[in-house]
Length: 290
Image (cartoon, rainbow, N blue to C red; front, side):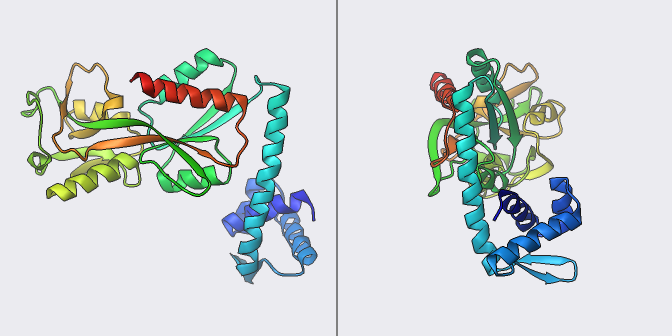
């Protein structure tokens, strides 16, 4: 059994599509198909159910996929550890977040300590982010709400109050505080369902007797302030996203449930590089100062 066979098998198993897997791997479909066939011959059992061009991972395939992913995970940890021993400056960090309001400040602090480290950040819904962490494809996740699991370390770093953002000329702009039920007839702009703050707000509002009506739903939280300022709708904004804005007002909400927890997540069994350890320290220190 060869390492390449495992890599190819995992790609095909995740996609259940030979052509797409070949495209992702930058190999010909015939070469990929032959590699999978040789792996099945070595194992003495088919890993996929085939119907014409369609592939479906069968029960032996599902079990072998779990083992193959763990094997490649351990090899990748070894590679990362040796790379880290050879040079801190060559390290890379892969990050995934469901909340980006604090990210610029965190990355700025991290850059001051390690200016030569390369990092890549993805803004993702929870259901997409956690599998990447479990498979070792990202080093850390910044998540709201926190996620706890058998293989995950979860450290809550912030309790973040949520405010109502309104245009400066809005009839509610001079209010010192608001009860949620007062907003049942308003229109809102927000992120899509699946993002932590959206799910929390909808849940608390529903418990208060209404569901917010959204005129805009997107993937870019930073855009919401501009939409509020333009008078498109009101928005629920976390306290960590507060900024000096002349044309909007942030009004405290009286409902106690509108506080989100922000957590830093990492894999319990994954090797953490020196750059990763410093990044974790930066995140914890950053929120401690807020």
